Image (cartoon, rainbow, N blue to C red; front, side):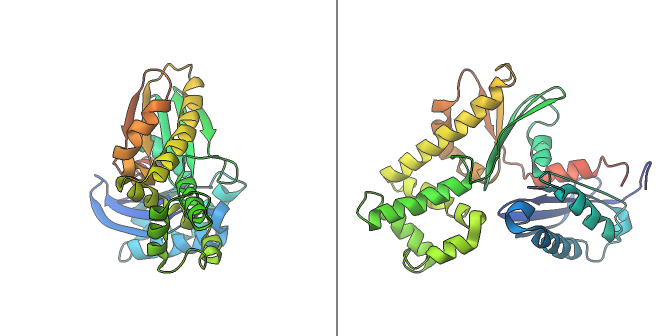
Amino acid sequence: MEGNVVYKYLLGIDGGGTKTEFLLTDLNGKEIRRLILGASNPVSTGIENTYSVLNDGIKEICKGFNFSEISAYAGIAGAKSSDNKHFINTFLSKFGFASYSCSSDVDLALEVALKGENGVAVIMGTGIVAFARSGETLHRTGGRGYMIDKGGSGFHFGSDAFNCAFEFIEGRGGSETILKLVEKRFGKSLESSVAEIYDGGASFVASFASVVFEAFMLGDSSACEIIDRNAYEAAKIINGARKSLGNNENRIVICGGLCKQKEILYPFLEKYIDGDFLLEFLDEPIVNGAISLAGRINKC
């Protein structure tokens, strides 16, 4: 269907490596329903899982509403890899929305963080990626996945927590505080939890990032070192993104799950970001970017 479309409701979907958030609003952005389900990144969980999460979430949040009166926009991590965007758009076409579109969750973050202005938007969630915008130019730094990126993501914080805990167990240093916090989460010994860690994948590991910050608040020196190392790696990505703009844009906006730790992260990042800058942590949910984009679709 092409041309102007008429709809009464907006559906925004923010799908990441840890969770997928669904938000249904009226045309003024007033919330009607909100729902959070599991991960939907097709690269890390498979396209069939993406379909399953989207299907369950869409049917639940739109229950009782006419799909033909809804404009839907889905920003899914990994959507731009391979043919995933095409696959997800084809899947969305089956619901009978008034209009629909799919892109990466990065587009949602840019929409919310920069609102069309120039600057650097950084997603620090399960993974980490920075996008520098100057006019129509968009430059990506990082975001190559946990097997390539070196730090600054929820996965790396969680992985470092596990490593630090095992170091203590094996007498190689580490932190007893982190070990106790990790084992409290598992409800059993860490040594008996290795298979569960690998079965859980990147998003499960990332869920343990909070352990590092909890240990830091307890005065743990190893937690401080983990935060410092990851902040250094994150700052390298940020600095690289800014260099792509000739360091002319000072605004840096960080969004994603690690924003919850902004009070702790700010001074660590501040040490390693080059030059003059204005560093912001975004409190607004990224799914709001999907709502904004859903309201601008004029064809499906």
